[in-house]
Image (cartoon, rainbow over all chains, first blue to last red; front, side, top):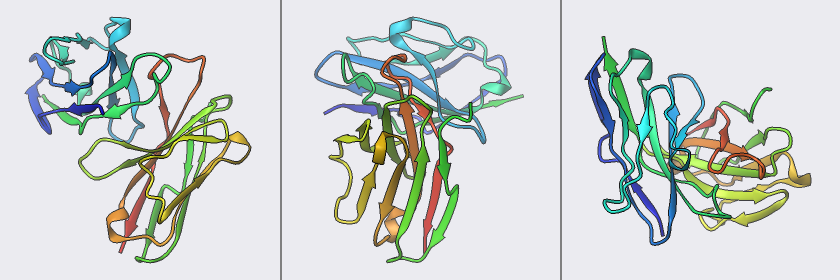
Length: 111
Length: 115
């Protein structure tokens, strides 16, 4: 069974400060990891996936298989980054859309 | 594109009453998911459909929950009878086999309050 843990329920930073939202996972196989985001009054949507090695809205995330982590980082937070962030895991391969979500972290960026 | 459409957005019922939620996925998406989201928690999968076939319903409490996806398009999730602990947001999502792995498109959710 897979499990995703986001240890922080709330993360509050000032505008311009660096941000790191933590995500740890447990899975016996080779996982694919994702970050989903939900802005106020909007739907849950995909932010980025580890396999793409992309930077979206200034956010990056590196999969660390040794530490079983997939932390989301941004060097300079903006007020519009305030949202709920969910880390998600899927088994690699054909079941690539079988997502298990973490409990979520609320990011608040203060002016 | 309207995206995934869910109704009703909000529903308040008394315990032991039945309730049904409806979902219309994005056109052409063959996979449909129902997720449960309790307050302060992440979404948890209830059931997944590939076209009209339920391929993963291991987390669906079958004593009171049922779902169907007739003709492989729209889907309905039913609870009968509802219990106080069923108060939550019920999310529907869809994805395409030809789309990017891990990209689910979510609806706005149906918020259920059981009194």
